[in-house]
Amino acid sequence: MKKDFFQYQAQTTPHPLSLEISRAEGSYIYDTDGNAHLDFVAGVSACSLGHCHPAVVRAVEEQARTYMHVMVYGEYIQAPAVEYSRELASRLPSPLETTYLVNSGTEAIEGALKLARRVTGRSGIIAARNAYHGNTMGSLSLMDYEERKAPFRPLLPDIRHIEFNRKEDLDRITSGTAAVILETIQGGAGFIQPENGYLKAVRDRCEAVGALLILDEIQPGFGRTGALFAFEHYGIVPDILVMGKGMASGLPIGAFTASREMMATLSDKPMLGHITTFGGNPVIAAAALATLRELTSSHLIPDTLEKEAQFRKRLEHPMIEEIRGRGLMLCLMMKSSQIANDLVLSCARKGLVLFWLLFEKNAVRITPPLTISEAEIDEGCAIILEVLEGMTE
Ligand SMILES: Cc1ncc(COP(=O)(O)O)c(C=O)c1O
View (tube, rainbow, N blue to C red):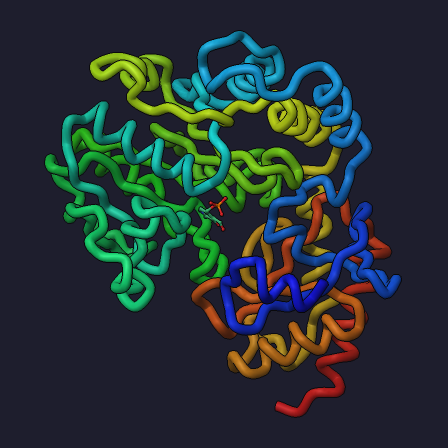
């Protein structure tokens, strides 16, 4: 299997972790040698309810038996997508009411960018340095890492960058700006939270010049930070909310939500302004609905804050310089990328799944399923401490 993986499956790095999976359940992944791996990563924040949560499996099985794909997005009335969009709207503040369902986070970003240009009639987009919004051409254009962009140029024009959390940069948002796009909490950059009313200042500046505010909640969304969406912590509402990852607890989905009036522009002048074959797929939408219901009818979301406190208490160690983030979107800041790397790889050998962040190389990701238990947190933290004790600085 390993040989075929390298030969027939396109690779993303020269050194993938290449764990061979047999199955996964709850907070554990099992390899083909029968070893259990405690999962502190949750498929990079995707498996919000853990692996194969019974409510999600049941919803998928029932829907798969009833009907799967019957028509492209938006033509037929299919209950899972309609119910999902309605329930999501009931959980969101006004004017976020109408949802466009797509297949991935990056595709939702593309839709949000198109919507912003369509609504404002402007072309300028402002994004933050060190942001990550995905890897299709539009999302890639938003990144400020030239070495990752250069081979793929030309990309989208009219994109400018500001420093996240630096209010002095906000005068770059002008009457030529269609939208400002920010991650509510920066992920790849090192789990950086907005500070000192930063998001409110961005919101105000957008309003002053008629630009839209797009918040990318693909990673912090769906309960990971102790609220259904992280923007709720900062007293603002975006014009366009972008979602993905944890939305269907491990199945491929993305979405963007805006006011009904704004969203209506995608179906008029031109008609079919944004289309997709599989967006809103009923099996995936059923999984998303089961996830949303489970998250909002349980204590899982408030519990993330208690679990965060448990991680912070258990992981006090001189080699951990800082624990960044909120809820179960945490990262350990180590003194060097070498130490971070050794920690991830040594823990992997002891049956604990950790991972890196995209840009901040001194960080080690801890984004477990929201369903992780206290005992499992203790078990994984003990492995981290044991590895750190055996390491020299
Ligand atoms: C903040 C953020 N935006 C966008 C994306 C892209 O999502 P996807 O990989 O589903 O295209 C990611 C994925 O890591 C992300 O973390």
